[in-house]
Length: 204
Ligand code: HEM
Image 1 (spheres, rainbow, N blue to C red):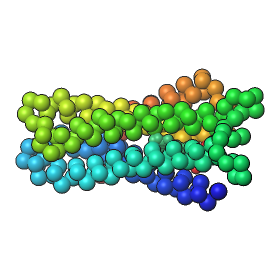
Image 2: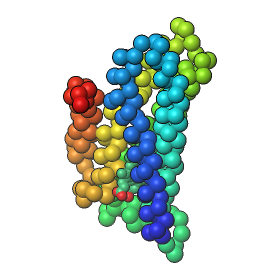
Image 3: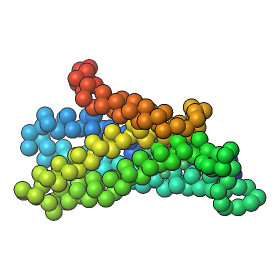
Image 4: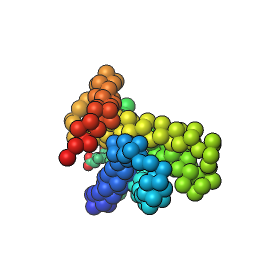
């Protein structure tokens, strides 16, 4: 049903914006800002800021993930009248996977790794720190691990979106060299945003 697919697509993209928007806030804005706050300011700001931001961040990730899987099933594993099973959009002309399916499967691979990092590495670490269960000497390595995986996810977001958009909007034959070039461009774009934009982003 095109209406159901449209509703899922809308939910998927708006949840994806919520998730990746918060990821970018953490990495492009907050990580720089936290370095400018003293301990007293951190104690005043972070208990108000972080639980709210992390709530939208992790549930945005979950809704994006679930709606993405449903979207995949609706597009590639269902044929109106015939029911569930691999359909013609999944299969290419020569019996292999179609270009559209190959692009999206790469995007999904990156997206699922990112979702895993949020729910099983970043959030458990942040939860321990914010709840006060992890304190003192134990806090620094946990904070570093959460920060590292948050940065990894920021990098992965570039290639992930190549796969998400390549499936439908580029009308591009899938080849591995093409994928490699686009992954490199996606990584480079994020790298510039992470390490070069803040210099201008601090000014009005
Ligand atoms: C977490 C795992 C994810 C899965 C399983 C997933 C799955 C999918 C699927 C199946 C499609 C449809 C592709 C097609 O029409 O051929 C899609 C499209 C899309 N996804 Fe994801 N996705 C994930 C993460 C994300 C994230 C994090 C974003 C960030 C914004 C995102 C943004 C998009 C966009 C913009 C489209 C294209 C919509 C369109 O062309 O109309 N996805 N995704």
